[in-house]
Amino acid sequence: MTQVDVPHALCQSCRQCCHFMTPPEMTPFASRLPSDPEQTDALPPEFSITGKSLSLSPSHREGFTVWTCTLLDEEKAACGAWPGHPLDCRIYPLVFTLDQGEPWIALDSTCPFSSHRPNDWFLAKALEIRDQYWNQWDDCQKRTLCHHFSLDTFPHRTLLVRLDRPQT
Ligand code: SF4
Ligand code: SF4
Image (cartoon, rainbow, N blue to C red; front, side, top):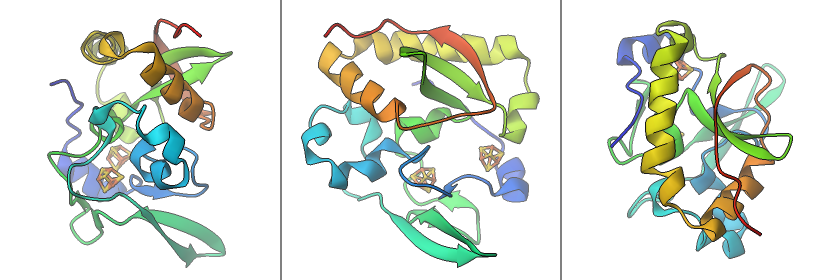
């Protein structure tokens, strides 16, 4: 099962993940499902957590509203669903995204780990993710994902692998 293992010590010093400024943008897809039940069934199961709901809790920090995943252990900077956390969390800083209507796997360079490995290392991971996941999902699942991707913006991203566009 392909995932990106970011060293825990790096995450503990960074603590950027699992906090979001503007839901649903860039949030785990599983946290968006309750508001969109028609999409729920079509999402590939790799994005769900068995037996646990994934929701976001708002708090106010320095004049901003910050949304935090309720599965996050803030003190330890650890995920309460690990190792069964959703696919989009497991592969970060690789992200599924859209560019001019086309689905891609990209590298989010706002994560400090993105500079800890050469681009070829992330490219190899992205190709594994394409083959293990994207190429196995059906067109309905891909269309649902593309709907969610369209809500996201990754201003600092490097496009790595172009994915097959789902048939309409
Ligand atoms: S942005 Fe990267 S280094 Fe920071 S907490 Fe997230 S995965 Fe860890
Ligand atoms: S499921 Fe885990 S890794 Fe994903 S956003 Fe929540 S706490 Fe973070």
